[in-house]
Length: 336
Ligand SMILES: *Cc1c(COP(=O)(O)O)cnc(C)c1O
Image (tube, rainbow, N blue to C red; front, side):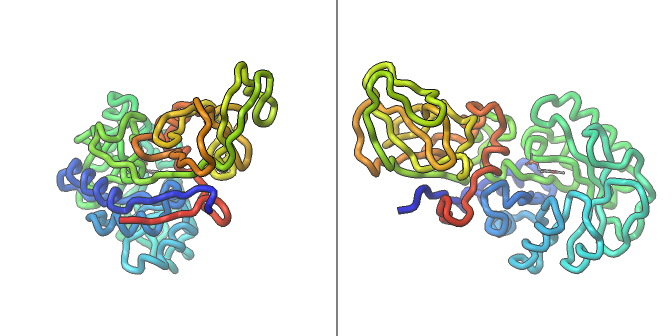
């Protein structure tokens, strides 16, 4: 038996892509599949998004672009962080230019203007050369402060107005869903494609369906007597006779140490995790003796990644990117 299994539902990605296209009302959907598709698998996520109508794939690095090119010979692929133009040209990638100096001529280029993110981006837009195909910027607060986002949109609109014939793009998922002014020609959407809420709420509120589920089983069940503990550091000590189950999933699989206390579903019922999460295991408090092999859902069946993010004091993005289905860890199954 595998220690745990991650299921990726490509039908849910197609649904989310269609939902975004509907919200975008005519603007193009560009699917962000950087960081191995936020832990979901870049190549398959890209395929599902393209099937549902996405017209370009965004990655962070040239290496990610080269890997994606193998499975997607005809797709437009945009690299959003600085990269080597010669390498990009070889793999027919498009590049973002976000710093000063000459605009490379080898590849199609998107000029990135800083309108308030204060990270990558040019402070002034140079005269676009003939190989510039897009003008872009990135929003710092689309999920949290629409007033600041509107200021950024205004700066972007003003600076790019003379070049409205180029594809202008500034929206991420949050803006695509809730800021109609941010649409312009295209939107670069990642998190919403995976059915995770950019607002840390229930994704169903925005018509999105979770894509990833993660299941395991109880591998060991034992009774702790009062004063006995489970795990490193004895951070959980039983006060009364307590049944605990050991789930063979730990921080090396992406079940982070700071997720201690988060709930998982044991045979469909919510139970809290207790003690220190180890590299390869986590303990769950049970209310009775259950058989070894009882199903445990870590994500799915209504239990959202967002709730684990809350427990860990982070965002769904970081939990998803950290799930490790590499060799010898969770088995990955793609459906739909
Ligand atoms: C990651 C990224 C996005 C996608 O953001 P989501 O919130 O996941 O939709 C868009 N634009 C840039 C520049 C990014 O780095």
